[in-house]
Length: 349
Image 1 (cartoon, rainbow, N blue to C red):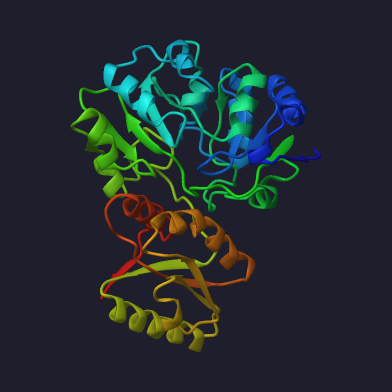
Image 2 (image 1 turned 90 degrees about the horizontal axis):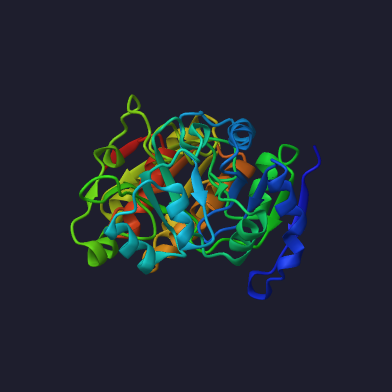
């Protein structure tokens, strides 16, 4: 299969440029497209065969749910059996944007899309190319991140091409994504909304709109036996090819320990890298030291995270040592991705 690339400018978007991609979706094909979070791999979310193609293209376990992307809020009611008042408040506040809500599904949504669950995850992205692709396709678009399962998610069209070229029909190149990590997922099927995956929309932001909000215990742990209720809750995700370890603690102790670990691995003949904040970048000595962003602006870290992980791969780094980015708000989402990328390997100093 030849994968064709369509370039579009999100600041001067011309709807006609994606007509061929929308036709591919209508015909049951697959299209990678930009959102404000990461690139998605889209197919007709109401077509079982399209969802099966998505799983196959990614090498994704079929019990890992897909998210349905819609272009207007009213589309929720055709897909969700119940839409609680709190969900409406969150939709009004954060849609379009990086928030996914989980509802009880209607029969129209196939189990192939929901990973066999009776719930459906839905979001309305804000990227103009994503919204127009959904409108022109005439269906909700099921879309996980557009990468081979387990690898760092794509924040550029070139990342998609590296993983999926030859497996999908089109890639819509809308430039680099703004946020760089996947949407916040909130389960709306209980009395109290529950975060299933942290993201740019934080716990405090949600509480300001709807009051009490819980966090699923699986978000804090690594229960591999639990059936995933949302994307990213099970399996290894976001992982570079090199073995990654997070070093957590006070700044100088962290840099000292990382440099020691680098020297140990280098003495064994391995190529080593360090994932560093802008504030501590000059503190490290390694074969490769990559700056992910500034602690003063956490969104620069989320936006750069997956690109940096992929750059380590491109440079053949075998062992990666990373600072910890624990903190409130977006820091929680960044650490969630880092912990999964590192297979929960953490050293405290």
